[in-house]
Image (cartoon, rainbow, N blue to C red):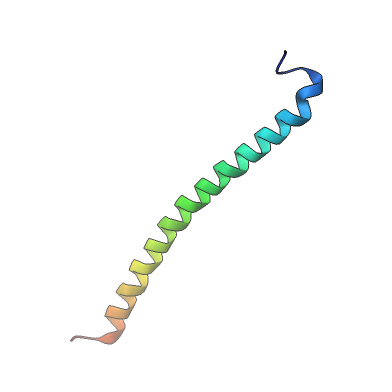
Length: 54
């Protein structure tokens, strides 16, 4: 059985497509986690500045 035969190309394309979607999801998950932490730290800093001395 030849994996890269012409009749296997739709299956290989589908496997590659699903794999790259998974990679994109992992990258967006990591980026979202980083962005959430950065935004939370920024808003906490802003709240501390706007509330004045305690």
